[in-house]
Amino acid sequence: MVTASVGLYCETCEFVLKPLFDSFLATFQSAGSAIPGRGVLLRWAGWFFLANAAVALLISLRYLGVVRIPEGEYAWLFTVLAFVGHFASLGFIGALLLFLPILIFPYRAFVFALGILLGGLFVLAITVDTFVFSQYRFHLNGMVLNLLLGGAADEIFTFSGTMWFMASLFVLFLVAAEWWLARRIWRFVLNTPGQPHGYLVGAVLFAVFLAGNLMYAWADANAYTPITKQIRFLPAYQPLRAKTWFEKHGWVDPDAGRHAVVAVGRSSNLDYPKRPLQCDSPGNLLNILYVVVDSWRFDTMTEDVTPNIFRFSRESLVFDA
Image 1 (cartoon, rainbow, N blue to C red):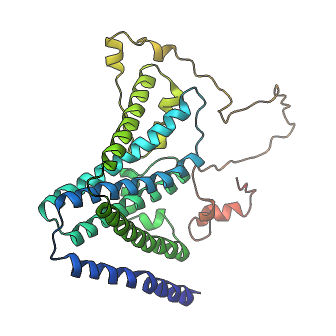
Image 2 (cartoon, rainbow, N blue to C red):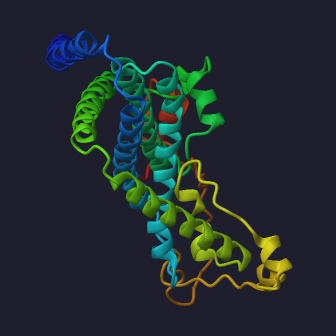
Image 3 (spheres, one colour):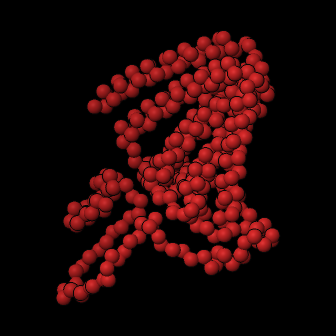
């Protein structure tokens, strides 16, 4: 089994990496000595990271599969504005990271390599974050990175050979996809010189970004929880807050947060009890011990990972929730 997996992995690497390396080498040979205009490279960087932001936005829809959008008059509108505006801003930050290298060393092959590296890391980070959030309901942060990079990582996280194999295939596919995307956008930039498409798209995305932040600022000042509770859905999301400014101009009630009543509506997961509870005390009390571990992967309760708990479970009832 291991030999077959290694053989398949080597064949996959040869199939994916060889054409990619040949294409990359051809780019160095054809464009290494030629210096295209910095304006062309800057346009490419903007469009390239806009495309990566769109890819990250599609991947981020996984967040919505593990959370429930609160009910409210403006909740879904804010969700759309926040997701689109946030990932557009992350793409803009990625483009900014390329602007200075372009101004200093405007070689297409170098800019392509750096852009593919940054874009690939960006998409990879969002992908990993969606898995972390679906499992633990929080995003990648300093604590998680410390666990991953710390000496006890092997004791906390266990990954099978199949998982490593699939992760390696994904990284190879991601590099190939980023390279293909870079080439396609380069052709688009060369075929549309002087077109105002970028300014129009940028203006629309900035309007979306601004609208989402203004909606959050209003919701935060008015303690409108269907919007404010969505802040945890997005990674590294820091929306605008202006509660003091709203209060200073008399546009909100300073005590709105204290007087806000949290109502349990249809959007809540809590629907209990269905009818009044009737409990009869048993004559003989049972000796019951509940062992409950939050956000623990059930497939890691094995004799190798948790031998004591596993041995105890062999003599008990186990509920696979």
